[in-house]
Image (tube, rainbow, N blue to C red; front, side):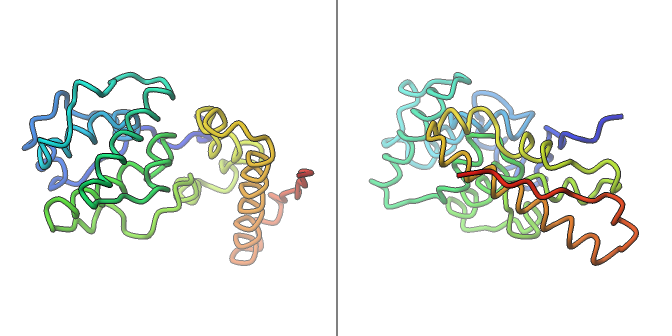
Length: 204
């Protein structure tokens, strides 16, 4: 059994699902990360509250990075005119299917549009990494440094930011976070020391 990849499907709280169903969206989201990634459903949600501002015929329900970026850029431009802003890191995380990003963004949008909060969506502040998933695994099954890079830096993210130095900095940050977590694990449980992690330095 492979533990290296976090689960792709994430359940939304019942109240959130009821809210989404009440909007009669063009399709029912089954996979939260995938279905909200291109921003099409997000635009549909806002179109129910700002019908004059959002024109759905100008949105592309495609899966390419270009389609995603164009959809989200259009939504952000419209929201600025409505004096509404969403967290940029949550948008970027949703585009690149980061763990917890779409759920966090939906919580933000739900609160913004309904003035009601759903605390069960995110119990702690999300960091949009697979760390919470890794913590649920037995030590032997947790990701190595190289796997942590693959899990937390996706191809679309590299395509969206072609600057080599920027991507190297992201990789270095992932490695350092991975090393820090392993050190903390060893401090809490010395028996885990046999899973020693080599510090990999990447020249920037």
